[in-house]
Image (tube, rainbow over all chains, first blue to last red; front, side, top):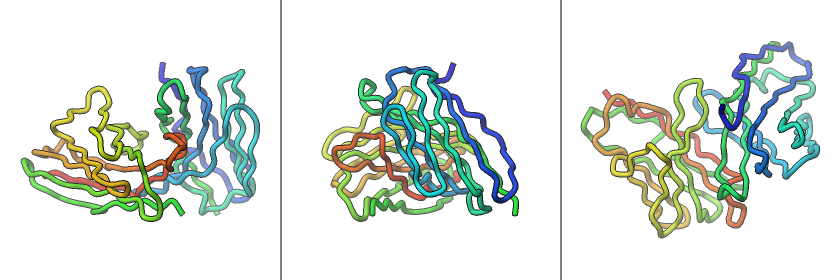
Length: 112
Length: 117
Protein backbone atom coordinates (compact mmCIF):
# COMPACT_ATOMS: atom_id res chain seq x y z
CA UNK A 1 0.00 0.00 0.00
CA UNK A 2 1.34 3.40 -0.95
CA UNK A 3 1.61 5.98 1.80
CA UNK A 4 -0.39 8.44 -0.29
CA UNK A 5 -3.06 7.41 -2.76
CA UNK A 6 -4.37 9.75 -5.41
CA UNK A 7 -6.58 8.94 -8.38
CA UNK A 8 -4.59 9.86 -11.50
CA UNK A 9 -7.72 10.70 -13.50
CA UNK A 10 -7.99 12.24 -15.96
CA UNK A 11 -10.86 14.32 -14.68
CA UNK A 12 -12.72 16.34 -17.28
CA UNK A 13 -15.22 19.04 -16.28
CA UNK A 14 -16.99 21.93 -18.02
CA UNK A 15 -15.94 25.48 -17.32
CA UNK A 16 -17.59 26.86 -14.21
CA UNK A 17 -17.93 23.48 -12.49
CA UNK A 18 -16.84 22.77 -8.94
CA UNK A 19 -13.91 20.38 -8.93
CA UNK A 20 -13.13 18.03 -6.09
CA UNK A 21 -9.70 16.44 -5.88
CA UNK A 22 -8.87 13.97 -3.15
CA UNK A 23 -6.09 11.98 -1.54
CA UNK A 24 -6.02 9.34 1.13
CA UNK A 25 -3.07 8.41 3.24
CA UNK A 26 -2.00 5.75 5.67
CA UNK A 27 0.50 7.46 7.96
CA UNK A 28 -1.33 9.05 10.87
CA UNK A 29 1.80 11.05 11.75
CA UNK A 30 1.39 13.37 8.78
CA UNK A 31 0.84 16.92 10.00
CA UNK A 32 1.41 19.12 6.97
CA UNK A 33 -0.73 18.79 3.90
CA UNK A 34 0.01 20.52 0.64
CA UNK A 35 -1.47 20.86 -2.80
CA UNK A 36 0.69 21.59 -5.81
CA UNK A 37 -0.35 22.43 -9.36
CA UNK A 38 1.87 21.31 -12.21
CA UNK A 39 1.44 22.42 -15.78
CA UNK A 40 2.81 20.21 -18.52
CA UNK A 41 6.61 20.15 -18.60
CA UNK A 42 6.88 22.62 -15.72
CA UNK A 43 7.82 22.31 -12.09
CA UNK A 44 5.07 22.05 -9.47
CA UNK A 45 3.73 25.25 -7.95
CA UNK A 46 2.64 25.34 -4.32
CA UNK A 47 -1.06 26.20 -4.15
CA UNK A 48 -1.92 25.75 -0.51
CA UNK A 49 -0.73 24.10 2.62
CA UNK A 50 -2.59 23.22 5.79
CA UNK A 51 -1.37 22.21 9.18
CA UNK A 52 -3.36 19.43 10.88
CA UNK A 53 -7.12 19.20 10.38
CA UNK A 54 -9.47 21.84 9.15
CA UNK A 55 -10.25 23.99 6.16
CA UNK A 56 -8.32 26.69 4.42
CA UNK A 57 -9.62 28.94 1.69
CA UNK A 58 -7.73 31.02 -0.84
CA UNK A 59 -9.79 32.61 -3.58
CA UNK A 60 -11.44 29.88 -5.61
CA UNK A 61 -9.48 27.15 -3.83
CA UNK A 62 -10.43 25.41 -0.59
CA UNK A 63 -8.32 22.74 1.08
CA UNK A 64 -9.83 20.37 3.61
CA UNK A 65 -8.08 17.92 5.89
CA UNK A 66 -9.85 15.19 7.80
CA UNK A 67 -7.21 13.46 9.88
CA UNK A 68 -9.69 11.06 11.47
CA UNK A 69 -10.43 9.64 8.03
CA UNK A 70 -6.92 10.23 6.65
CA UNK A 71 -8.48 12.09 3.77
CA UNK A 72 -7.68 15.44 2.20
CA UNK A 73 -9.48 17.38 -0.49
CA UNK A 74 -8.97 20.36 -2.74
CA UNK A 75 -12.02 22.12 -4.12
CA UNK A 76 -11.87 24.48 -7.05
CA UNK A 77 -14.88 26.72 -7.54
CA UNK A 78 -15.83 28.29 -10.86
CA UNK A 79 -13.21 26.24 -12.64
CA UNK A 80 -11.47 27.83 -15.61
CA UNK A 81 -9.66 26.33 -18.61
CA UNK A 82 -6.47 27.78 -17.11
CA UNK A 83 -6.97 25.42 -14.16
CA UNK A 84 -6.24 22.51 -16.48
CA UNK A 85 -3.14 20.91 -14.99
CA UNK A 86 -2.00 18.05 -12.82
CA UNK A 87 -2.71 18.51 -9.12
CA UNK A 88 -0.46 16.75 -6.65
CA UNK A 89 -1.21 16.30 -3.01
CA UNK A 90 1.72 16.08 -0.66
CA UNK A 91 2.21 15.59 3.04
CA UNK A 92 4.92 15.42 5.61
CA UNK A 93 5.53 14.79 9.27
CA UNK A 94 8.06 16.04 11.78
CA UNK A 95 8.72 12.46 12.86
CA UNK A 96 9.82 11.66 9.34
CA UNK A 97 12.23 14.56 9.27
CA UNK A 98 9.65 16.49 7.29
CA UNK A 99 10.26 14.31 4.26
CA UNK A 100 7.50 15.12 1.82
CA UNK A 101 5.54 12.32 0.23
CA UNK A 102 3.73 13.15 -2.99
CA UNK A 103 0.66 11.59 -4.50
CA UNK A 104 0.76 10.51 -8.12
CA UNK A 105 -1.21 13.57 -9.22
CA UNK A 106 -4.64 13.97 -10.79
CA UNK A 107 -4.83 15.34 -14.30
CA UNK A 108 -7.63 17.88 -14.62
CA UNK A 109 -9.10 19.18 -17.87
CA UNK A 110 -11.51 22.10 -17.77
CA UNK A 111 -13.37 22.44 -21.04
CA UNK A 112 -14.40 25.88 -22.30
CA UNK B 1 9.09 35.82 -3.77
CA UNK B 2 10.49 32.29 -3.35
CA UNK B 3 11.65 31.84 -6.93
CA UNK B 4 13.79 28.88 -7.92
CA UNK B 5 15.52 28.63 -11.26
CA UNK B 6 17.05 25.68 -13.04
CA UNK B 7 19.53 25.54 -15.84
CA UNK B 8 19.50 24.17 -18.45
CA UNK B 9 15.82 23.65 -19.12
CA UNK B 10 16.58 20.88 -21.55
CA UNK B 11 19.72 19.00 -22.50
CA UNK B 12 20.54 16.23 -24.93
CA UNK B 13 23.76 14.33 -24.40
CA UNK B 14 25.44 11.23 -25.67
CA UNK B 15 25.66 8.07 -23.66
CA UNK B 16 28.72 8.01 -21.43
CA UNK B 17 29.01 11.75 -20.96
CA UNK B 18 28.26 13.73 -17.81
CA UNK B 19 25.67 16.44 -17.43
CA UNK B 20 25.45 19.14 -14.77
CA UNK B 21 22.17 20.74 -13.76
CA UNK B 22 22.10 23.90 -11.66
CA UNK B 23 19.41 24.89 -9.21
CA UNK B 24 19.34 28.41 -7.77
CA UNK B 25 17.15 30.14 -5.25
CA UNK B 26 16.88 33.67 -6.62
CA UNK B 27 15.40 35.70 -3.81
CA UNK B 28 16.01 33.72 -0.66
CA UNK B 29 18.66 31.62 1.00
CA UNK B 30 17.89 27.95 0.87
CA UNK B 31 19.57 25.89 3.52
CA UNK B 32 17.92 22.80 2.11
CA UNK B 33 17.35 21.84 -1.49
CA UNK B 34 15.79 18.72 -2.91
CA UNK B 35 16.30 16.86 -6.14
CA UNK B 36 13.50 14.90 -7.73
CA UNK B 37 13.06 12.77 -10.76
CA UNK B 38 9.75 12.52 -12.56
CA UNK B 39 8.74 10.03 -15.20
CA UNK B 40 5.86 10.77 -17.59
CA UNK B 41 2.48 10.77 -15.85
CA UNK B 42 4.08 9.76 -12.58
CA UNK B 43 4.69 11.60 -9.38
CA UNK B 44 7.88 13.08 -8.07
CA UNK B 45 10.48 10.67 -6.81
CA UNK B 46 12.80 12.19 -4.26
CA UNK B 47 16.39 11.43 -5.13
CA UNK B 48 18.28 13.31 -2.45
CA UNK B 49 18.15 16.08 0.10
CA UNK B 50 20.93 18.61 -0.08
CA UNK B 51 22.03 20.77 2.83
CA UNK B 52 24.40 23.66 2.33
CA UNK B 53 27.94 22.78 3.30
CA UNK B 54 27.33 19.10 3.98
CA UNK B 55 26.98 15.87 2.07
CA UNK B 56 23.66 15.14 0.44
CA UNK B 57 21.37 12.50 1.86
CA UNK B 58 20.35 10.06 -0.83
CA UNK B 59 17.15 8.05 -0.93
CA UNK B 60 17.31 4.30 -1.01
CA UNK B 61 18.09 3.00 -4.46
CA UNK B 62 19.69 6.21 -5.73
CA UNK B 63 23.34 5.79 -6.64
CA UNK B 64 25.28 8.61 -5.05
CA UNK B 65 28.30 8.02 -7.27
CA UNK B 66 26.16 8.40 -10.35
CA UNK B 67 24.12 11.38 -9.22
CA UNK B 68 26.59 13.79 -7.65
CA UNK B 69 25.05 16.57 -5.66
CA UNK B 70 26.88 19.65 -4.46
CA UNK B 71 25.36 22.42 -2.36
CA UNK B 72 28.22 24.85 -2.16
CA UNK B 73 26.28 27.96 -1.22
CA UNK B 74 22.94 28.99 0.22
CA UNK B 75 21.59 29.75 -3.23
CA UNK B 76 23.08 27.07 -5.45
CA UNK B 77 22.89 23.31 -5.65
CA UNK B 78 24.08 21.22 -8.58
CA UNK B 79 23.23 17.73 -9.75
CA UNK B 80 25.72 15.99 -12.00
CA UNK B 81 24.60 12.87 -13.82
CA UNK B 82 27.82 10.99 -14.45
CA UNK B 83 28.31 8.57 -17.32
CA UNK B 84 24.75 9.08 -18.43
CA UNK B 85 22.83 6.28 -20.10
CA UNK B 86 19.52 6.30 -21.96
CA UNK B 87 17.71 5.02 -18.86
CA UNK B 88 18.74 8.24 -17.10
CA UNK B 89 16.57 10.20 -19.51
CA UNK B 90 13.95 11.90 -17.38
CA UNK B 91 12.62 15.17 -16.03
CA UNK B 92 14.76 16.37 -13.13
CA UNK B 93 13.30 18.96 -10.78
CA UNK B 94 14.87 20.72 -7.85
CA UNK B 95 13.13 22.49 -5.03
CA UNK B 96 14.08 24.59 -2.06
CA UNK B 97 12.47 25.21 1.26
CA UNK B 98 12.44 28.46 3.14
CA UNK B 99 14.73 28.60 6.14
CA UNK B 100 13.16 27.20 9.27
CA UNK B 101 10.18 25.66 7.54
CA UNK B 102 11.41 22.17 6.76
CA UNK B 103 10.36 20.48 3.60
CA UNK B 104 6.64 20.94 3.95
CA UNK B 105 6.65 24.14 1.96
CA UNK B 106 8.79 23.67 -1.09
CA UNK B 107 9.31 25.92 -4.07
CA UNK B 108 10.14 24.14 -7.26
CA UNK B 109 12.29 25.02 -10.20
CA UNK B 110 10.92 24.66 -13.73
CA UNK B 111 12.70 21.36 -14.28
CA UNK B 112 15.33 20.04 -16.66
CA UNK B 113 14.49 17.54 -19.32
CA UNK B 114 17.44 15.25 -19.92
CA UNK B 115 17.62 13.08 -23.00
CA UNK B 116 20.49 10.65 -23.33
CA UNK B 117 21.03 9.26 -26.81
